[in-house]
Length: 609
Image 1 (tube, rainbow, N blue to C red):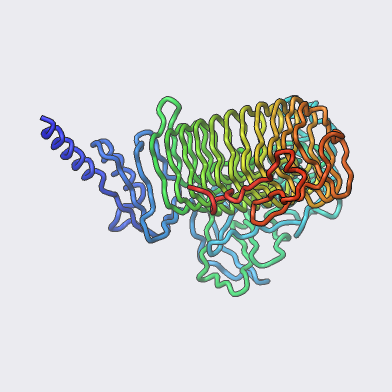
Image 2: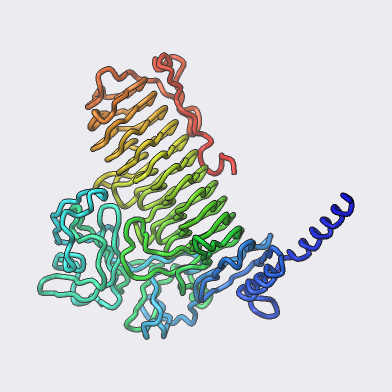
């Protein structure tokens, strides 16, 4: 009897394997299947009981519309063939470039002239080209004022709601702008404190030196005391080779080639869609068990409107909603207008060993329950929208482990929700443009653990500043343990947070250092070491109810706000290897039970997959 059952099972398994033979896709449409046809065939195979696999062979695939997967595609594996680079673009090649004098070249795009196609990102020979900008470096200073107090997000935002006029007009300095400004082409980024607004120009009044925008800003210009703005996409902003702008008035792309660049051979790509792959289900009918592996995904578009905090408004090259137990593996996502990934209402999502780079907005943006983000490399994000975050996350019971994050215009990793573990990540060179953020920033959250992370070389460009580990509004019951920061003058910032524990961290600062706890309470600080060459300042030390076994050493002998019974001696730290700061044999801190930290395994190269 059991022999018969076993034989039947073997036959069934054999048939199932027969039904899962791969469906192969090659560049072009003849004689092979194209991607859309392959997905249709995979759906037919699934209806017959197979678990389909679509294999995409090396080459370029230009998509006018994104590939959309629904619940009927559950179980699909969409993967690159081994031995080649399969690249999917949501874009179109621009050809037939003509010399236009002064070293410039133009390409006619009739759809642009008719208002049917608009874009603000271009790649030339695989490199994201720089948009024409004014001023050439830095920013203009506008004259608008908005002297209304910000009451915190929890407190409802602005004390008085801004008017429409305050959100759509800006007063500029005479001489910065003028009648030469082509309002159909010009776009303006107005900087706020932790975000920015990129909008179009509706009109310019020379008499009052007022610009009226085509859509509202996220905050009034001048709010938070910030007065910076930049003008994009005007001919006057072409100041160096490698730059371009979209002349909507003439219906042309204008490009200034790099030295030696042959426009008859150059591959120029402009985006046609906001996403490349869309995985779309619902909470009651999710897309289940889809795997996307090994593909290269690049060139996506964004609409012209304010993005909001973290460039929230923009789509991802991979867009996912209503998905369960899906996997993204070994992807390269690059040269995007918006996010690399944008996913929400997910359960069990796993993102591993992906590289995300040169994004206009965020890198990997996801929200849901039980997700895992492991071993990814996320860098050079926020190239169009400086409020972009490399790895913004939210939801419940997430894991962020062994990722490498660097070169970000705003924060590196953020989380809002319950029960996340952020461990063994290496984060550096974040906060390059905006303010009031951190390498790791958590807010509106409970039960979050930050453990064994290595943060170094974080930029503070002013404003509300930049820190290594930031627990913001309503962060409660969180643990910051065994982390290292070096080259960060503000290792720990805690604002409107309560009942959190900072334990066993080492924070090494060249210069002045500060630990801050405004409007916070119920903190425990245990066995932390702060070693600074300059002054150490603790603001609102009353927020800390328990100080146990800490050493706060100031090389200049200056400490402010530090309880007098907190040890002030030199802990004699030494760093024999990357990510290792230990106590010398003669360290008096050994008597307190301190041991330094070892986060040498942090980051993607050294950590497990």
